[in-house]
Picture (cartoon, rainbow, N blue to C red):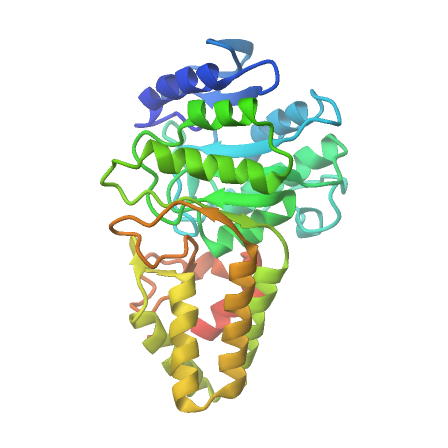
Length: 375
């Protein structure tokens, strides 16, 4: 929980929700960075109380090392029958601002190799859990490093049930590609999260009263709790649960490959026109993924580009298959799929291109090269 900043007051109301939903069967451990970095604590939600497990020295939530320490301890603190969910709480920006000149990473072979590989920290080249005291944030690659090290230390070789984000804008295919291997289901919002965040009390009570039999069921509980909590809200409140696996990214890579077989100018024209007709989310070049691919499919069909049309259809089919649950659309979220992709059809306004090539999504799909100079 990255509370060092303007979200600090929200920590205490969420503590109350967590403790109200906790039980002997549903436990929540939280690494909490308090406003101003006065201190950090590991807290445990018990029925009607939040109890400190230990007090820690000041930490920076932009540093993956204390996060990996906390996660590893959590993973080994419960029996084999325990179902795990790992969540990030605080500000989020998806793929935007995902740069840190002092990025702390493990080797890519550890981040994307077999779970449980030995961790060797290495220094490398900001997007989530900003730490106001240090001015640092946790990049998506650092989050992957924290999870890889934690799994290794805990000797955990299978994914947890859920990886969830009580943060804004992390319903991004780039975030998904970076972290999906650590969980069975990915739960996030491509929009801004409502001001009060997730409704932990309702979600945990549902899980307590009806213990989930699968990761998908647990994720569905989270989505429906969020939907109920904001049913009367004017905020667009769009939370989406997506089954994790390589299929989604591989299907998009197939589309990029089909586009790359076109004459470069034609491919860029197709992507640009499709992008200009797709909804942007918060940042102008942050586009709804499904809308973009649907527009590409429609234009390819009109132009007789059979291979591109078929690749787009395959992707849309896979995306539908991996969808687990989503909140009902509200004003501002109609037609959105809950997952975005960077597409600089208005120019690289946020300077994402300087680090995009280092992201796993770009490595696996070639998307960054295809959209370079698309304007």
